[in-house]
Image (cartoon, rainbow, N blue to C red; front, side, top):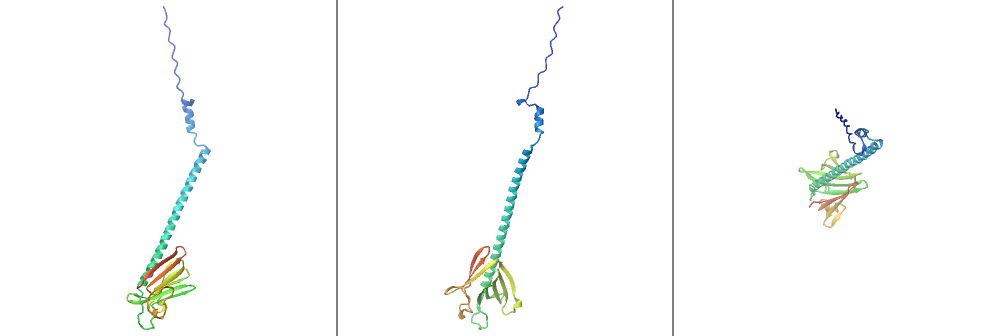
Length: 212
């Protein structure tokens, strides 16, 4: 009787290799290896540069904002001072033809320490002696009722860091740095008054006020 041959077992097929000849286990080991010391130092350097740039930009922005706020406050101070001077000058009155014992309508005096402009102003129906005095580096606003003692004097600072204050007065003959220009002018006001403020940080600021 003829025997039927037994078929040989089929050998299992080998798993295909990954591209590049690297197994899955080797790839896993590479991924879990982490950053090298050089890579870590480079990353720290990049973050340090970015942090420095951010800090410098923020500092410059803060400094610029503080400078702008300071300049704005300075211009507000100057605007208030010029507004006060305008209001007082517009209230200035001449002494007319009243007795000679009345003070001059406006007197400008200068000295090495500064300058003073004094005049009579009608405030609330009463005469008031108003003075703008420059001494040192400050322009002050002084006022007291006409004929009142010095103890009744009120004082307010107007502008700081003032190097010089120059007053000019307009008459029929033109501008002058003195007032009154003569005995006949002692009871009159000039046609206009001009002030030149030489400030330490802003330069020269000028303003002209028409009186009559």
